[in-house]
Image 1 (cartoon, helix red, strand yellow):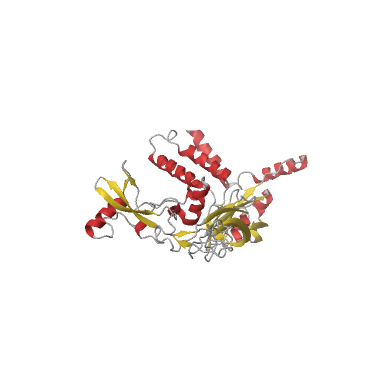
Image 2: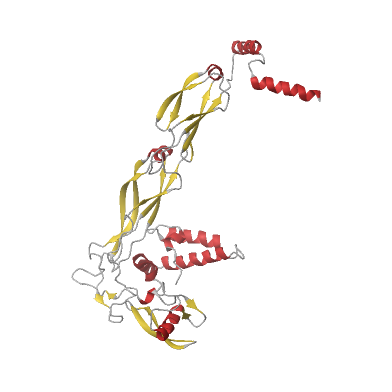
Length: 386
């Protein structure tokens, strides 16, 4: 069975409605990043380099890109889902499947052959997902908000109701494949002449011929349209996380469901708060008298200001905990805590009178009121004895 390919837009890291210049810029960046000359012996880089080139070869061609937007990989690679090239003679796993079909009565053998022989060109196809980025402030991410987003998506053409044919006309069944989207061809292989199934070249595997294409969608059945949506950003979302808008992506084909919109958030730093998981940290400056005597101070939280009583003798860098004042859990109950670190601020530019008062205070207190200082000097005395 063929390996599932990644979406070409995802491979190049661009959105579906990107311009040719954006496409070229993204391709050059990735091609340089994964070029074999810059990554000698790196098999993973070599594979990514091939993947990038394959994606760009399709998306840089307007006709191939249009087919890819409508039908996905099957629109540009007839063998997708049915096997890959093998050897210099063009022999593929689809051929092996046909050989064993003739020996064992059909159905494939050992996983060869497969979906390309039974694919229904008129089957519903889900629309592609769309990826966008939005920027949020710290508070918007913490508390949730409404945000307007803009993007472009493929929607069913209203002019032709998605048929791709001009008004008053309709698609006709392909006379070559009789609507199956596939034709059986003979091919000479090392095992002799065998039959294999390929996508019909006359209808490009769609099973239909549109003689008079719709002027609006040029026969594609879908058109690109810019949209604006107001979305609810969930409270508690963090930087780099993604939330999903179900069914807001590209419209499907043949009645298939629409894709999704994946919204990835980027959270700007805040001057007061720092996030740690669902907990919040902040620092507040206090004076020396406040640390010594204790005081009631105002502490900012994401819900507003709260009052907190600092106890007597608070030491520098002491951390206090405010329960349930942190970030709400995303799509859940409860929230984190807030941690407040006190920062003792030393006064500057003192007058002579203030300095004299401090000297008098220092004389009156001595070492007896400083536990750490007294202990340090006791240890220092012991050290000097050795």
